[in-house]
Image (tube, rainbow, N blue to C red; front, top):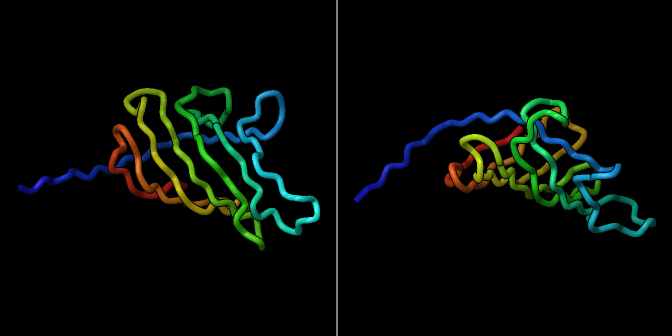
Length: 129
């Protein structure tokens, strides 16, 4: 018996906000390196960042970006990111997309792989910009 999966392209648009200081930071450094270290390699953050509908951080919350970011490059500001974008609104409520890849912090546009999902995104694959 053959089961065909229908592939569907879904384009999601939302805004990711990283807050590293102030009263309510959303990214916390969990591994600190000794001051004598020449690079940031190994410096690691745990994140729970808001995902919003519009660019302003005060716009409607549609989910959370939850995961780990670590500096993984000795020559630039390259992060290794392992993250779930967990949605909490509309038809995507309770579903998530799992992201894995390099985040070249100084690049204007960054691309990371969507490696899996849950809920409505159970068989997700693709990329995130």
